Amino acid sequence: MNLNINVDDNEKLKTVTLSGEIDAYTAPKLKETLLPLTQEDQAVVKVDLEGVSYMDSTGLGVFISALKSTKEYDSQLTLVKMNDRVYRLFEITGLTEIIDIETDSTVRGGM
Amino acid sequence: MSTLKMDLSSYKDLLKQYIETQNEQALYRAEQFSKHSIQQNISPDEIVDVHVQALSELYPDIPDNIMNSMNFLLETMISYGLAYQEYQALREKQYELQSEISVAANMQDTLLSTTKPNLEGLDIGVTSHPAKQMSGDYYHFVQDQKGSVGIAVADVIGKGIPAALCMSMIKYSMDSFPDEQMYPSSILEGMNWVVERNVDPSMFITMFYGLYDQASNHFYYSSAGHEPGFYYSAKNDEFSEIEAKGLVLGVDRSATYKQYETLVETGDMIVLLTDGVTECRAGERFIERDEISDVIHQYKHLPAQEITEQVYQHFERLQDFQLRDDFTMVIIRRDV
View 1 (cartoon, rainbow over the protein chains, first blue to last red):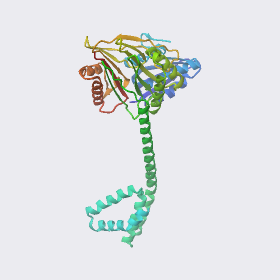
View 2 (tube, rainbow over the protein chains, first blue to last red):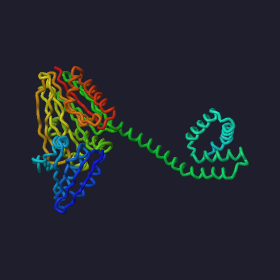
View 3 (cartoon, rainbow over the protein chains, first blue to last red):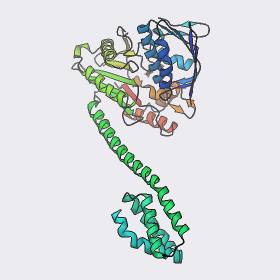
View 4 (cartoon, rainbow over the protein chains, first blue to last red):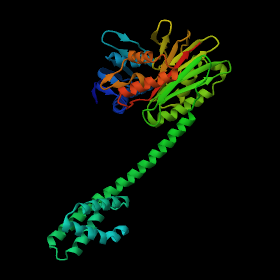
C-alpha cells in the first residue's frame, strides 16, 4: 500500500494531507516532505491524518523529528483527525503529552 | 576460453551428431555442456563463437548470408555476456555482504546475551524472534544479591543494523547502573538521558522495566512509551492491561517516569511483549489485543517457557510464517 502526500503551502498555514499507510517504506517520503516545512522560521504546519489507515512506529519517528525541528525553528506542528488505532500509538508512546493533536470535536493533549 | 577451445572438437561432434540424428541424447549432452560452461564462467558470446567455428568446419561451403547472420548473433551476445559477468560479480558481492551480516548477527547474540534467572517459586519464560537477521528487540534480566530480578524489554524504532547497534549501547549503559539504583523509574530516567544524547533524532526507543522483589512478591515497574503488557490474575481468572504512562526514550531530556507497583499473588502472571506481537496482521486484518490474551489463556496450564513458544507459533501461523516485525514475549509467573 502507498502513501499519498498532498501539500497546500499557504503563506500563513501549510497543510499536509496524508492518505494511505505510513510504514518503513513510506516514512522516508513523508520525512522528505514534512521536515523542510517545519524547518521554516515560525512556520505553522498542520498535518491531516484522516486518510491514514495504518501507521507503525517508523511513522512516529518522522513526527518526533518534525517536533524536534519546531523547537529549533520556532515553528508549530499540529496533527489533526486521526483514527483510533493511529491515536493509540501516540498515546502509548506518551507523545500525546508533547505533540499538539486535535481531533474533530476535542483537543486531545497539547504542549 | 581455454577450456572451451579444448572442447571445440567435442562440441563439433555433438553438433554433427544432432544435425544428423536429432536425437535426445545429443540434446542432453548439450545441456550438460551449457551447465559446465556456466560453472566455468564462460559467457554466451563465447559459446556462439564456438558454434560458428564448429559450423564452418563441418560445412565449409555454408552460404555467406548464414555465416554473416551467425557473426551478427555473436555481436549481439557480447553485451549480454558483459551484463552476465556483471551479474556474477554482484552475486559474489552479495554473498560477501550476507556472510558479513551473519557474523554481525552472531556478534549481536553474543553481546546481548542474557541468562534467564532460575529461581525457586518464579517461573520465567521468554521467546524472541527477529523478523530479519538482526533484531531491534531486546530483553535483559538482572539478578541482584537480595533476590530481586530486573527485567527490561525494549524496542528500537528504526529496524535492521542501526537499531541492532543501538541495542548494544543500551545494554552496556544498563550494566553500568549500580545494584542499589535498579529501581524502574531511575533506570528509565538514566536511559533516557543516554539515548537523548547519543541517538539520531529520528531513532527512539521504547522500554519497559520491571523489578520483581521475591522477598515481598511486589512487582515494581515503569514504562517509556512501551507497548503495554498483560497482568493475569489467577484468583479472578482474567487478564488486564498493565497500564504505565511515560514518554519514549530519547525525545525529551527532562522526561520523568512514574513508578507503579503491584502485589503478585500465587498463580498470577506478568506478560511483557513488544509491538511485533500486537502489530501482527492476519491477511489484511490486524489482530486485537484480546486475541493475544485469549491465546495465553488457552495455554496457561503449561510452563511459562512453553506458553511463550505456543503464542509465538500461533501468530507465526497466522502471518503465514512471515514476521513483519521482531517478536518478543516474556512471561513471569509466581508459582508458590
